[in-house]
Amino acid sequence: MRLVLAGLLMGSLGSLMVPYSAEAQSGLVITGSEGVPVLSYRLDFGGVRSRLDRYRLTIPPQNVAVAEVQINGDRNFDGRIDPESVRLEVEGRPVELDQVYWNEEFRSLEVVARQPIAAGQEIRLVLSNVRNPSSAGIYRVEARVRGTEPNPLFRNVGNWLITIEDPERIGF
Image (cartoon, rainbow, N blue to C red):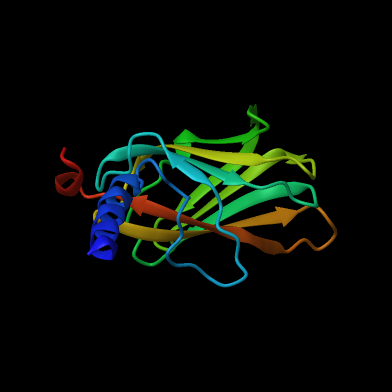
């Protein structure tokens, strides 16, 4: 009997301690690719489906200077990115951009810095005026960088597993 009561009590407390997904973004990972790092991100306006949001996507320090950042959404990501509202930051400071290109068909964004970003610095991609995907769920968005070495190739640096919420489920 004591064991049953202890189990019920722990079950009740455990449900109170489960983080709300909007509070725990990029914390608990249920799915992913083995050997591919899961990157940190934040959605400023809660990640509600079909609404405007601001994405803050963090890329960890790289061991090479970075000339270009590319992100690729999975095939189900039907959100829209405004290329006029893209900013790149290094250690919290904005970086001048040479080119920003959003390919809606392939769900790919390319951001080219005017000057290469030195190795060993955290990079943050800030996307304002993003129209969130129309369906709630978890979307895998791949991050790649191109260095400045001779014959540079894009290298995969990880994935963001972005959670989009349903407004009915979260009480809006």
